[in-house]
Image 1 (cartoon, rainbow, N blue to C red):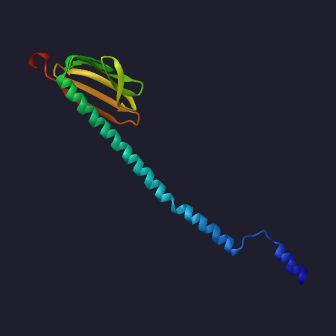
Image 2 (image 1 turned 180 degrees about the vertical axis):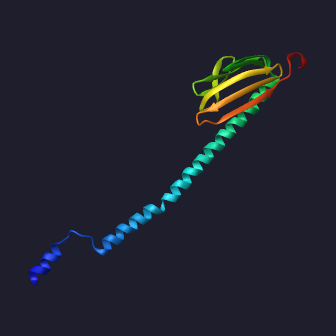
Image 3 (image 1 turned 90 degrees about the vertical axis):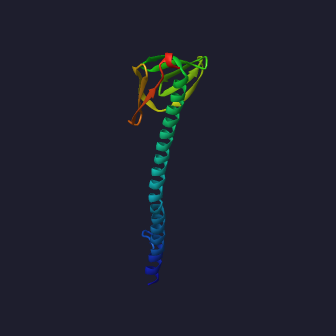
Length: 151
């Protein structure tokens, strides 16, 4: 009888009830964080989308303001140059950016994560800018300008 009890005490191959409950508690705690992780991820994606829209609005407002005061506007596929306040202003594509420079001194990034862009002059009063972002979003802006003789 003593030998049988001794063998039972040395048999440590299985889990006790407390060990099983403890393991189950750890799994439940870890699983309870999964919805929180997905919710945080969705919030981050939403904030990133707001940032892109904010960046686009800033870009269009600044460009509209500068083009209204600009003169001698030259448009190519990926670049637009004009004179504003006696300074040469250039908007151009560079790698995955649309950047701005004044008198060819330094560069200010205006739009980021750009896959493709195109400037086009539709008429003497209208310039179109079309852009495709790296996430596939396509946006376009029409800028109406006054002809140089009417300023």
